[in-house]
Image 1 (tube, rainbow, N blue to C red):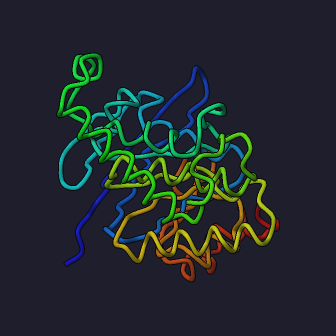
Image 2: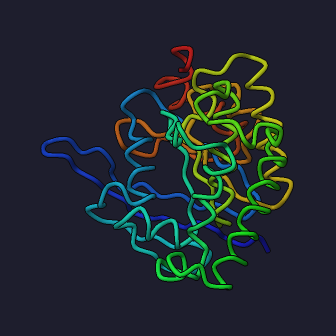
Image 3: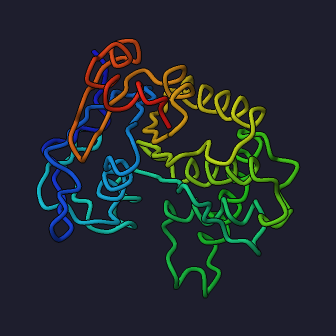
Length: 256
């Protein structure tokens, strides 16, 4: 029996007079790539922001790997085991690629501020381990040769890869990717798909928001479609593509 990594139910969120989410829920199994799609304004990013602690939900229940969690702060969600990338790349521009990944890895360290100040043996050992792991992850996503380059000097596609490496550095139960293909050319999209496939094949779990419907349908194991903050359809890509409600509201207009 597959292990449920993320179980979210009855999530609602209102902004003033706008009901942004109404009773949204998803179940994601370990090793799945799960897609979240819908027209602009459907509530996808709001759902992501609730899930990852940027917005506080009005209602809803949240479980990660069988344990309840409360998405009230980004750092607490990261500690619980969810790592996120953003549609607008958020790297430390003047840090090297290696340093950016090391920042992500520090979520899992134990030494604390005092250890860093005193440079205790434990801190030094952890720093070596963090550096080694960061280099491994840069190699894993295919940009190991750029470890000592400032992140701002990397190509757009390589910056996306760097964000994913930094997310992986937290050893997450779930990786939440917010439109990772946005702004990519065709070659970069192929490389992104290969990387996501590799992550899945290593039994990691991904939740994906993406406007490129072709990419989602060719990559995801299951898909949920949102429209006006409500769940329009959920199922395999084949099931969702045949759903008359989805065709009328989204796919029939050419997608996004």
